Length: 418
Image (cartoon, rainbow, N blue to C red; front, side, top):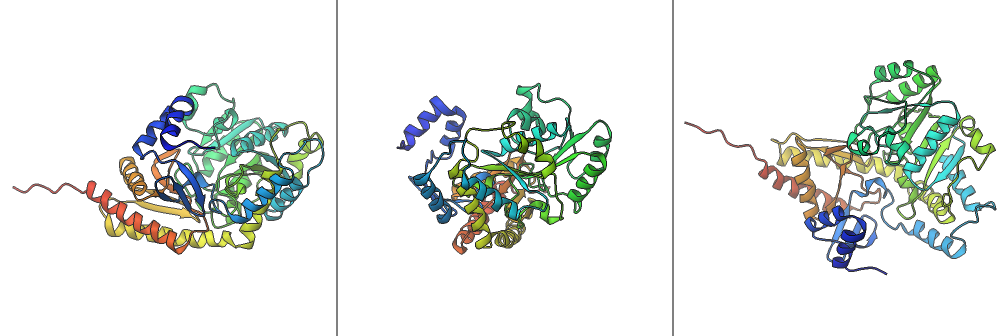
């Protein structure tokens, strides 16, 4: 059952979000109806989805994931939570097989923020009551996760948050060392690349240095790979780029296959031991539902069987190079940095105003991209690894056209001559 466009907007205005309804008026009131691969269709048009906040590494409705979920719905969609359930066992084994070495325990949850909350409890159970995260990092908006997300615009209305939380500059090992030395046992939570921070790539060796400092100070090392994991960076994990192994690794977004929400926490035996011994210590009614579990295990199989992790790295390099060429050719007076790792790509024009114009011009050409939640002046592209040649041509043509329009709008004013 679905509502038409006008009724959908009205229901949003009255019952969901008047802010979302208002934004819809500026974007033509499009309402999603179907989606396949990199394409999203509305009642009026078709869009190329290079946004989706990092969820669609397999595109929309990948046939293998969709078929597995539908089959499971007809067999056993929701478990009793009392009996052992085999799809959870299969998904856990599949995840451990592709995880960094040493991470043998899996705790499934429903969302990335829930994974962060679980990691905070893992740290508390291990006696690490201080939390340290990076400025610009994004870890979710539930209360514990929000304490780590160092952005006043999200935090201020909800204070007081968790106590004993410190934020240090991302990529700054000296600052982290100082924070670790300043108090008792700590838990350090960082991302291998800051996605919502504006696709910030740390200096080479940063994660290894974080791991070393955590070992020296007896701190728990949590790597938040909710956005970066499972192929997004052209590696299975951001941890693989430097060969680091955290105590806890957070998984989300791409684990869903773009079909069913699911996330997970991977941990060492030592960290997970209290939760293994007492399975009621941290629970969730809907976590590890059979439909989510088959989505997770099938998504991992698709990534492996179709070699999409490698393809993400290759496609990302092509896209970054082409977008740099577009800006060099059509907007040399608007110095714009294009940076990325795999299919996590950031485009940073000289001002947030230019960035906003570019988002709208891409939208007018039916290409969806995202602003970065912690860096509004950075466009973020997280396209699927199943982009076709036709999809790429659409993307590059739309970017060239959009950049030409924006460049003309922000052309330098000629100097007046006497």
